[in-house]
Length: 229
Image 1 (spheres, rainbow, N blue to C red):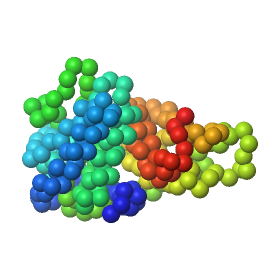
Image 2: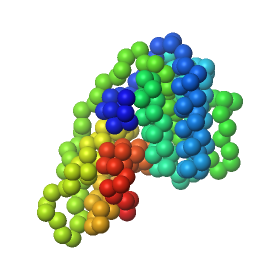
Image 3: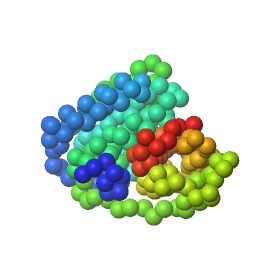
């Protein structure tokens, strides 16, 4: 499975089987986590054989079952968008390996003895990881293409280039909090693209969502076709 295929097939999964994740797949995920931490200045950590985060406290309201492995999404304060961008790279790798995932923002129980949160850092989310009891279902788009795009070019034919539309289609398949899709991509002259989060009342996860959709857009559009504004 290619990463482009992973974008289309990935759906959030909350129920997992007891099938263990193979060591070679965990090694690939760990290697990418190390790379993301180096590039993004993050502190993402893989946690295995730990069921308590999804069986205690607030986790009971998340309707999760069978989660024994997850990824602790930890970053410095203010680096949430970077965390979302790199975290989604990990999600898509897991999908290409035949695994399932789910971004979890609130409905989990913290297990501070299983990961390290250093001074100045915050645990922003967990990524449930494993073999899903199901493959999940796709949520319908809440927004149209017109809702999430803006043409800021000074000279334009009125049509977006094909690469831009591929990026938008990939971005609209990205997971966002409550499936709200509160983002907009602005196309400027010289193939510069600006990604912005729209205001959402009581959504502290908008910066993470922005990073996730930027990751999808970049893969769909092709990094060689544009640069971030």
